[in-house]
Length: 99
Image 1: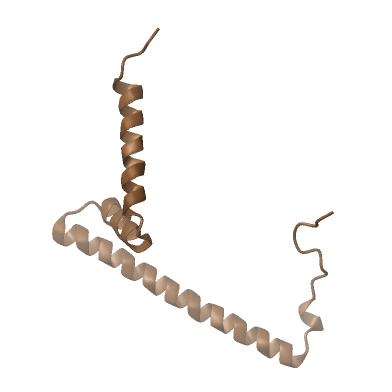
Image 2: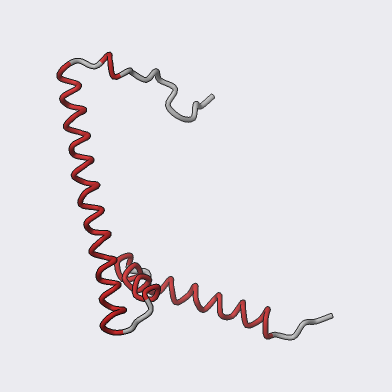
């Protein structure tokens, strides 16, 4: 039978050696630096979207979606998804209802 998850015993912080505590402290500082960069990038993305709105009066949601689509290189999938939605919506909401 396969076990799902980690069933090993977890160590307490009190059981760490001085070297392990130093290693953990460095890992935490690494995480902190990474989270700081992520927060700064989020702020930059928000400012870029605001700039598109302020200077070009473009819908923020549209600009965000365009940026995400460009980043993920998923334009073709977006087009297909929108086309499927349009067809389905048109058929259900505007098409004849057969009785």
